[in-house]
Amino acid sequence: MKLLKSGGIFFAAFISSYAVVWDYLQSCPELILNKDDTRENKIFYDMLINDKDFSGFGFADNHFIRPKGVELFMSQFPLEKLHIIASESFLSSREQELIKQPPEILNAWIDLAEKVCEREEFLSVSQHFLYIGRKI
Image 1 (spheres, rainbow, N blue to C red):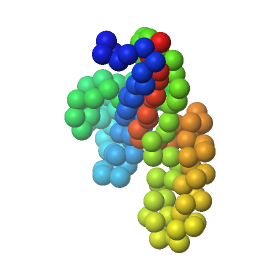
Image 2 (image 1 turned 120 degrees about the horizontal axis):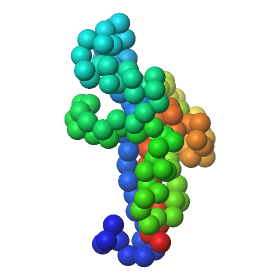
Image 3 (image 1 turned 90 degrees about the vertical axis):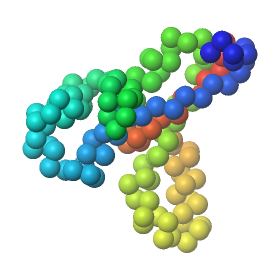
């Protein structure tokens, strides 16, 4: 932060704490039956149930954060929040269907997703967030 000039734009990407759930659901859905079998499974299950952030090992060492935690975390820095964006949008779960559409249909859906990507309710369906701020 020291190298960023006053008025400079700062970008920070975050991994959603919910991304772990989607990853587990896709790669090994049976883990829901074994949520207490390993320390990692228990941590991820508890993180979701108790609405907590998590720092530690996921697929790598990371800080997994809930959508509502991004602004709180970034408030410790001398930044004016400009945007918090859902990186994947609500369209990500239907990507395979969308890419088969004619360009005008695909582009219309992408345009809609861009218009609503900052809505708080859509942040929870994204696996990654982008924080954009201006140094004060």
